[in-house]
Amino acid sequence: MSYDLGQQIKKTVQVRSLFIAALVLVCAFGTVTPAAAQKVTPPPTPTKITPQAGNTAFLVGHALGTQGYICLPTSTGGASWTILAARPEATLFTKVFGQDVQIITHFLSPDNSADHVARATWQSSFDTSKVWAARVDGITAGTDAESCPNTGAIDCLLLAAVGRQEGPAGGKFLTKTTFIQRLNTRGGSAPADSAGCTTPTDVGHQLLVPYSADYFFYRAEH
Image (tube, rainbow, N blue to C red; front, top):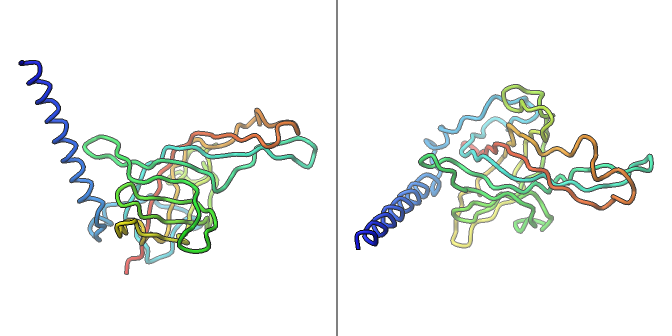
């Protein structure tokens, strides 16, 4: 009996903890206020990957995912890995009570708000609102000590929002996004020795390389 009671108490505590965590998340991410926006401080970035004046970061997520590559023929008769620019896939997390909590998924999907062209997509894990974005510019990893210090990683980027969609219940968490920065990248680059993609017989092969990064989301100040 005492064992059953102990297990029940343990489960009750776990449920309460999960409920409290969920409540904190709803309060933290359900409504983005100016005060919340001021708590997100991106590192200084080169002009090429800095959003236009009048935009402020309101959210940051640490991403774990993969960058896709395809093996294509070269002009010399060989083959080499070519990045699939629109094929990163990742899950973005933030810390809540010291635990990683998923806040956004990042993938490729048709832009339902515009021309249905497949674009890089970010979707809120809370209200399923979406933002689609396209590359504005980028810098080579390792060329900026504060925002992109890791040599050999995939590029750090500035992307501009080109499409938005509310969640099915009217969620708008990501719909005011204007720019997205991908900073502090690690990994994600194709093998330096082109392993698995050297001859014409390798053409068409695909490769997924793990990477991590910080994604900063911006919105217009007014």
